[in-house]
Each structure stands twice: as C-alpha cells, then as structure tokens.
Length: 82
Image (spheres, rainbow, N blue to C red):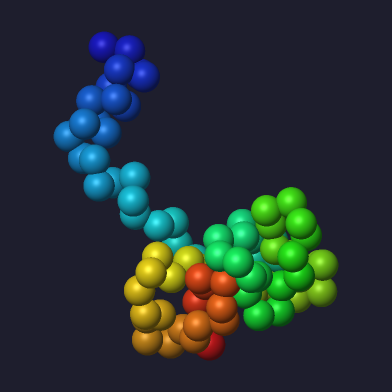
C-alpha cells in the first residue's frame, strides 16, 4: 500500500480528524477569518492580520463557539489567551 493510499484510508476511517485544531501558539500573523482583524492586529489587505512584528499573541479561532476558560474574545472570530 502506498503512503498516499494509506493516508486516504486513514481519512476515510477518521473523517473528523481533519477538524481538530492544532495547539495554540504565539503568532505575529494570523489568517483573516471575519470582517475585522483581532484586537492588536492590523489588516494587511492580503487576507492576513499582523502585529507588524511588535507583539506576539497566543490566539485561536473561535469556530463559532464561546472562548474556553482562560481565553478572551478579541474579535475577528479569535480568542486570545489571558
């Protein structure tokens, strides 16, 4: 079985696996998800939001749900670690 075929089989068996978010990490640039950028980020007009290298925040997408405990909503469909 080739590697690509094995991966395809895994995705068929575990279709929800692709929806799991990677662990949050500090970011200077994030994809623009909503109409605005998260608080502390500037719209780069290329589909990305940046802190312009001044700060690094730990953010994660809200995925349409409330932010988990220890996180705050910063707009732009993102939560930031407190």
